Image 1: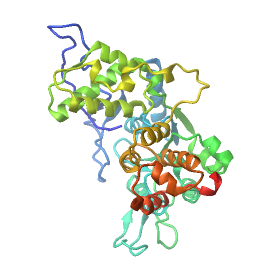
Image 2 (image 1 turned 60 degrees about the vertical axis):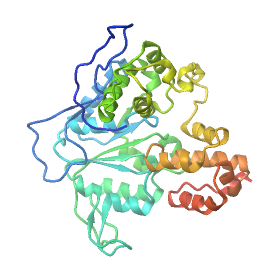
Image 3 (image 1 turned 120 degrees about the horizontal axis):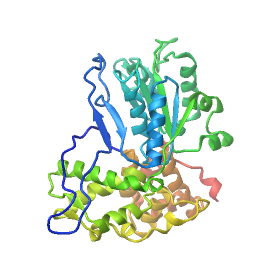
Image 4 (image 1 turned 180 degrees about the vertical axis):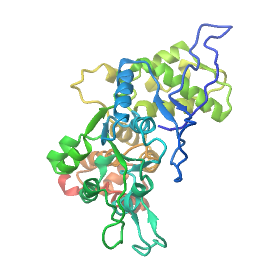
Length: 399
């Protein structure tokens, strides 16, 4: 989800020449400037302020109360939930409502960097420690001294990185890449998030149990959008106003039929998917009103997934991406690659797409490349991408 403050302005909630329609009513994120906050000598990663979740559903109300309670403490927090539900928004809320609000909030995407780069990003490095290290560089943990570090997708860390993080959590001491001996000690609040089942990963030996208990002091679960449908109109209105202002369009409202379809859709990509849909509609729709026919087919048609019993397997992001490549003949480079590079999907999503390809191809990566609609010359590029981002899966398991 995109973060940032937006100024609310009055909007019409009904048309003078037609039926009542849904107008813009509230913000998804309300940023309240704190004029009494102490100026921080270190630059913040985002604008300071109090970040609030939008919605009046029981689920969001309970979540906001829990955030308010947690923010008063300095305990480590583990936030879990599906991809796109707004885990970073929860983390920012905890930071902005707590005693560290005047200091840096430093987010780190643990899934978006290879191990060596992630180590440098977190702990920093000294000059000459590796090729391209022309000067000393502080890591996010050092930059966030007295503030908050947000470890997004912590379940994607390698076991070695998990060990380095555990050592820091135990000692508070930074060990920069290439440095001899220990470094400075920093005081930082740690908030982590993941869409993975860490307990299951512990059983599989892919996540350290001791690190889990270090991080899981307070556990917050963010509900998926399909479990709080009554909040969808408010989110739609917020995104409508936000993107209309950004793109200088004349769109002012969503028709009742279109809003009904948006509410009934299951939103497997959660709030992030809703945000992207609204941005596309604002850019492409001509006229002041978004109508039902403007919505994509999968949103207009009743979604049976949302009515399945919970014991049924829910369609995943990887399912949708794999289907697009096989049925719509979209290329891996236009479907999966840009979403991963833009942090819209995680390493685990890419690995799941590759796993499904290997199952179909009986472990042959060349056939996988053809299944994913790549040119033959792209085969080495595909393998290099998988190796670089730790997304390659042993092919022998599928032969």
